[in-house]
Image (cartoon, rainbow, N blue to C red; front, side, top):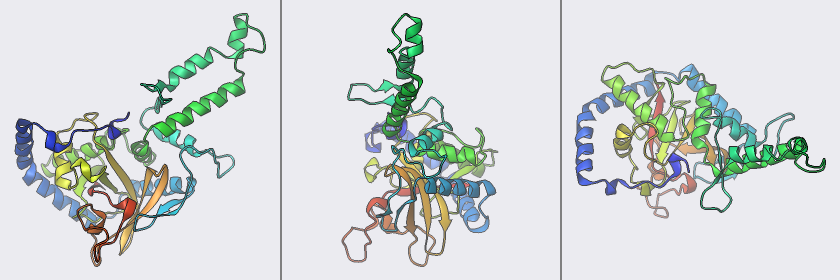
Length: 343
């Protein structure tokens, strides 16, 4: 199971001494994070999106179209169904099926991924080891060992099994962070400008550190800084992120920052999800995310009326669904708190 999606102890389970240390470190960082917040607001209100941010948004929209244009409205309801990750649909000839596009996203992280094939056993099988075994059973190899001409897999059968294993691995492996990593590579980012990972927390943590370094006057080549989404208007190309579900206990910028500040790249699992902002207007913004309802999905998020801030009704603590004046945001009601802003 990938790091973003494994169970993780809640903050309330942190030992008292560790919690005290974390709190002390956070107090030490507080003046620096205040300076970082100023940089966030200045960039959001005074600087246009960099060219590579616009490129990331463009690539995201192209993939959204290639997946059939699945969409969610501002109330978090699916209004257009697109293609699922497992489908073999090809919208152009020649073209890639959705599962093949997802395999391409993984190339930005590690060409060996995804590797897990689940079949009901205690442990998943490894896709590459299975393929090695199948290669031993090809007709040509078996005939060389004296087996009859009608035995073994021919080349077409071998390709069919290879495709089936790849499709199963795509289905079994969450790929939303791989999608963002692929967009970052397509946009021209290098390894010292972005952490290409299957875990959103890895590149988000690097953005958090870049903001701290920047505010402290230290140089950083990292392309993004971490900002408080509830206090920073998004621009096209920025990423909006959430810890998965309010039960994670990381439902504010400060809370998720406490963990990102101490977490090493590749460290403990931290379930997260990020979308790329692809359009902003006076009433809200549109995002595109991978592996949202098993597709590349565009969603609408509204600003609070008369502001450039995300409407509080999207947040778990924002209002009570069904109460007068509270808009039910359905599937988009998540602890959105983190904005990864292009520097």
